[in-house]
Amino acid sequence: MVGKVLPRQPQSLDEAVLAVKKLVAEGADFSIGLGQINRQHFDVNRPEPVFEPCTNLRMAAAVLEQCYAVASTKEPNRQAALHKAISCYYSGNPKRGFKAEAEFGGSSHVQRVLANAGTTTVTVPALEGGSPEPNKLQRAQAPASTIDPTYESWDVLRQYPRY
Image (cartoon, rainbow, N blue to C red):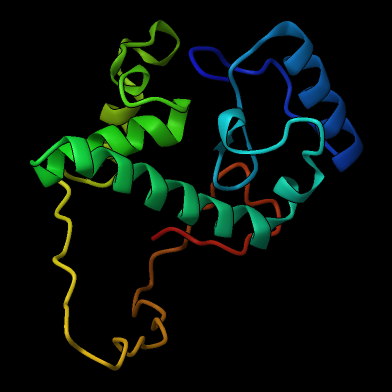
């Protein structure tokens, strides 16, 4: 929840849908799924698709892209526009994500995202125009490391290792 922490995470899709209904009835501002899609960005009366991981991640990308498109029309500085897009993604508006939250040690959501990115300046790469061929993506290589991976609490299937 924006500005709060859910006391207990749902353990099934049915529990998650019930939690969404309860939060909606309370008028809470919340986000759901792997990509933490804010309620402003989906139909709260039909949240089930948002809990499907692939759908959720596609939505996450689309929401961030849309938030950045809107922010960049109003903010000429690309980094400031990106920060406003992060705020929009989190809360549905470009300002709320900059507000300090006591539940998170007085940090704002934008500050936490930037800290997790390992930098306070996120570089937005320039879009290459005029190329008829899209950039070719290469398959990610597993890191050559003897360090055991760690996993986020949400990664119960241990599919997303962190090194």
